[in-house]
Image 1 (cartoon, rainbow, N blue to C red):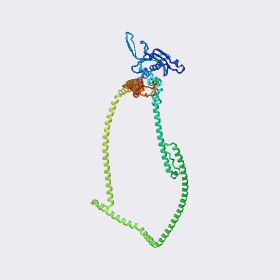
Image 2: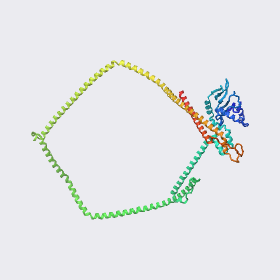
Image 3: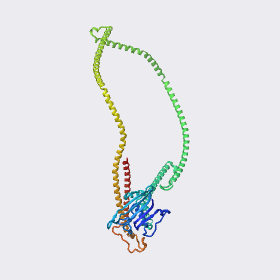
Image 4: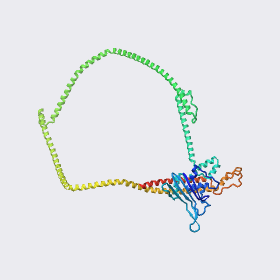
Length: 575
């Protein structure tokens, strides 16, 4: 932001019109406002703040106070005109507070409402009017500067009373004042966050040390006697150098354990060699014992065989006779089987002749065979007649079905002839329907191309209506947030004014006999001020200020939300 020109008319101690050319003052890069008390140095800064935000810093905007100069003539209206460049734009802001002026006709005075005008300089067009609304101008300037009035006063314009208190205060009081002016809560939050990180890191370090010690204990258990040669260092968790000491101890224990392992490996190798030689000797002795046992067993079996040779010869003789008897046994069995078959055949013949008629009881085999052949021929003829009868019945069924199919075919032929008689009419009618369907398909394709844009416009219209309601809700919330911000601001300024009126009582509480007064420097305090009824202390004022800041924050968030809703509504409306 860069100031170019400031015009002050009937404002504060300035009874006439004063012009300040900041471009000329800034030619050297920096300038100083100086002069005796009451010369109007603070009023110049108040005029800049009033031109930007329509209000002056601190308690000078308290209810009941007036920005109009008491030295100005009645017909000269109070006005602040500020020309500046901010955000790459050259603007001119003109503001007039609410004031009384003589009536143009008749006697008496009338109240002139507060007015604001905003113009922008365009190189090709010159000065162009932008707005005459206090609210729109305030929002535009706040967005361009990026700070509210309180933030601007805290960061850019340090209040005069707070600066004097800052010079006289001790380090703790200065810290509190700087924290209130510049809002250092985020730095305190960062400090607390870093402390929390430090505590968390310390906890992690201690946990890691405990895990290192646990691993060292496991190494000591695994190393066994090798670990006893170099005891574990007695360092507690959290002490520096624990990891290095444990690593050094682990390296020593590992070297000892490796030496013991090499010794044990050599001893094991020698023991394995002795075990292999002993196993070979054992196998040889076992093989010799097995051969000796087999030799003894063979001798016992040979003795037993010589003792039973006579019985064996007798058994061999009996075996020869049994084999000779076995050769004639099948012939004897065949003769017995033939006798049994002959008796069964005789019995079967007697039973068969018993079932024959009396005249055939004594017939021979040839007569019975001829009779059987003749009976079989008669049975064959009967079977052929039965099959012919079944075939006749099937032919009758087929003939009936064919007659029924013939009648159905005749009816189908008559239907086809009648259908063919009206075929031309039917074909013309179907052709007409096909052409109509093709025309309908063409129209459907054309309408389908127009349907998607229409649907999008319909969806956009619905979104526009919904967003219009949301914009209205956002405007209502913004109005409520502005009212709360104004109410909390007025309450805070009122409490601040009441505290400033009783600031002498606060200073009097800090007085001590024999110590110099911070205001007049006298060590004598004959009549200290006393707090009146309804005295406001620092805590009450800070609480009111915090409430006002929260209300301002809520108002800013409501403004951003309204701007976003308006953008979405404008996009939907354009679509």
